[in-house]
Length: 394
Image (tube, rainbow, N blue to C red; front, side, top):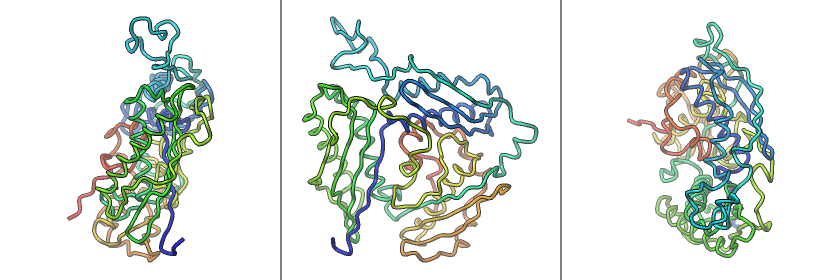
């Protein structure tokens, strides 16, 4: 390989992936608690295996005991695509009316109504003085933020943006092509080659849950069509991005993928941290985002680090920037440890730090309740429409 060429991998998963189910359930509970009380404290984790869902942690807010955890779990599974097809989809003598599914409208297990939801949650109000103390870090945290001068990708690494966009298109394919008999689970992995300012996707593998008897050849063709459309979009938005379809495009390379979701693998919240961040090109701090409220240092810090790195790039301070921040227990404001450009040179943070509110209270007060956390958990924290992604540069 030419010394100038570098390969960058990236992956993304669909909403029915077991780990993403857990992230989404966890964030559903964060969102529900925030409707009870703005400074609600939430720290929860979720695990799934087959038809069993386990939710643990603490939710502290007004009327915390009224939060319907079971409903949040079942709604998450249903909106991800699990369960039996609604009778309205089938007419006449369709076997789904009696059997619960048919060739065109299969049932995907576990069905929401059959789930066993186990919870070990500390539910109750915030303690005396705890509301004000939400502005203070109750834990230690290391966080990283990243931005690169590619407005077409919302300043994200091109490969991670591409994988996330492909996942969105594959998610839509399931709804648009019922004849393919696709299930809710799936994932995508892409390899991007960079040669200076030129970029091309060299290989793609997609694993998409498909009912036994589904047309695998038609699925492969459909994925190629989706891939072509996404490459064309990338070429239009990102300078130097090739629209050519890679010679290596694999669909369900391990064979039939009919048993998926929690029936095929167990899941746990917080396991898709690299997908949630910037892909493997950028180091992560290690703290999960989903399942934590916006006053928690892991989540608030990740947003602050991203905003700081993005500000450096948008103001011309560097073409590429990685920001590393930390919180000590008792800190009200993030500690800026380093700002590093793409060549490894240290940048003087004093130019940009005064331009942002780096406090926990600033994040929690500004962003709690401002966006749908189900969509955030499923599709990413750093897409353009998120409120914390907006920066005004004068």
